[in-house]
Image 1 (spheres, each protein chain N blue to C red):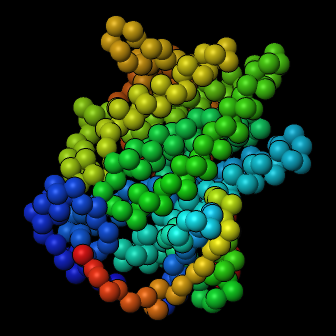
Image 2: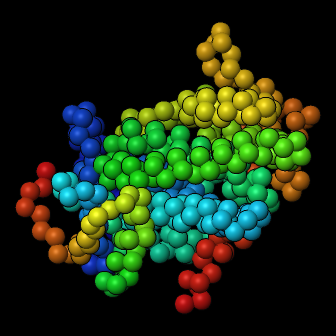
Image 3: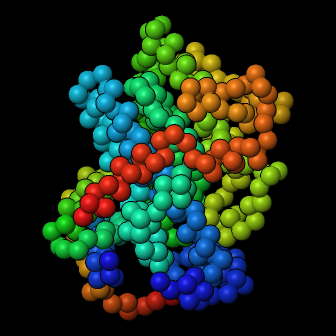
Length: 312
Length: 63
């Protein structure tokens, strides 16, 4: 395989001038090594996230209350696979061996958010994943759609945006329906208790801890991690409040932003799917240790995705 | 897979709209590429979709 330096002919200064002129990057011929490394990284995270949602959602869909609900869940899975395909296909054009990336990588080398390593064990958790995780994906990809300097991805996301809106509507419609019944609402709330905080983590390290430098300068994304976390809360918190469900965050009118009301980040008991909030906040370094070790379902999900490739 | 396995996908929703590029698929033969294109790019009710082997494309202008 050609190296990044061999594939990307432009210098960093040439890329900066190209972007400063308001032009999009259309392919390897417009890229510098740093640009290529950066766009590969963010595309891999995005495609891995879409891909792993498939085994996670398929496993949860077995709890569908009726066959037509199972059908809706499967249609979401099919969308997610198509979105993953878009990312990997673009990576293929950027000199990455797609088959090796998808089928030969070790499970702990996948780059999706830790949240997907925790099993979804009920229909309540599946529809909340649509309302929370797909909302997170939607916030992240809308940002890429409006800010990305990589033309082929920016254009491809028109499709993704449209379909993620459907997933979100699926999640919200079900949350609304289930919230109307006291027993369903209780079960929804107990799933929300672990899933809300896990999705807060989705956006990564706080800005004070993370240098975005090149990600923003080269326009791989437009908003910082904290801005994205705020954008997500702005969608989710008012909706959950309207449903009468409790989330540990509220809008601070004076500060003009959302504030998290529980220790964050916190320790997580991944087997019991419970936050150890009584122990108070932990450091981001401790969170990174948990993320890097991956969670309970990582190996099973990746194995499921790679099994038939290995058998061939 | 080699470069020749990539197929570019074009589609349109109405007759007064030109075909436009909607994406690409990677498949080793034409029939699989047709199925992939139809199932992956199903986000709109297209009235026409075509696929073109990338290797057949010649660039007349390249900025």
